[in-house]
Length: 398
Image (cartoon, rainbow, N blue to C red; front, side, top):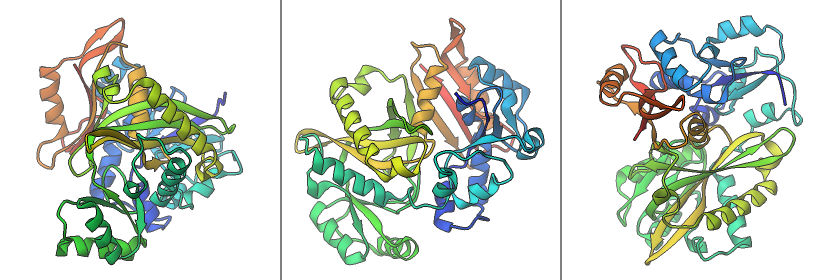
């Protein structure tokens, strides 16, 4: 096991940076604030020797919250402080996701090469693009045409012009359009009417001009969102970490993850054995894919359980995220909690009500309760609330 110090950086705007392509790209100010506020969630992957980069210091009250979870609060440091500590010490770099801008941001660190310097390669590759997930999906389901998988005509398609989108809409009545690069439900357009309006057409034209193609899918009658979590190690080993269950709104935007979900959520539609068999198929397919050749780290495969014509089906590969993701985070969180705890991990945003006020209200209504030295119930903030904080992350356990 490596004893090298790990440097963690929360940069969920990595997909935006990839679209831009410049090593000097900066996300919009509001998104940079989101990255800064939620940086402490990377502590769930860190040890006391590691660094989690965050420019603003955290409060003493928040450090006490982290102690409830056994997290290394002193690992949070600014990039300047971190570089002063490590100087020319070899480290392992672990951003949320790679991009040319992120590679530039972390370029002052000394990093040992692993698997032929995959870090640099990934920062400049198109492996994040949805077209790879579409190919993966078609290859998987062609090789394993299970009844629970969607029929071929209901699988995602790459589309490069407006007339082709209109044909697809005519075939499926309601559809979802996705840009090649986006995250957390951004970059999506849900079309619920049988004709495109002028707003739809402008969005489609803009996205096609910017990114070259769109992914089109039928709008399914969703039952459950879930993701299969894997990790590609530097040794070449591919590890399966299990399934996480999450919630999205009607437009596909992320709302939160279930922590230790009950069987009414995890086994409501398919048995553990069926889902384990699907996970093995996904693992085998990953080993044959470009992800295995070009990447190392966590990889989440988003899926969807849906109903059609009275049957329950599984779209086993909606998205492939070769980066840290909220699914693997939710699993890391559950490992820190009492085994009988259940609840939600959620993020917060409100343009007018500060996260600090929200935390104060929730802490009064749902004080944290411990059992066997582990958190079992109540509210705990996972980010350090400031007077002007618009964003936050928290646990609310039943």
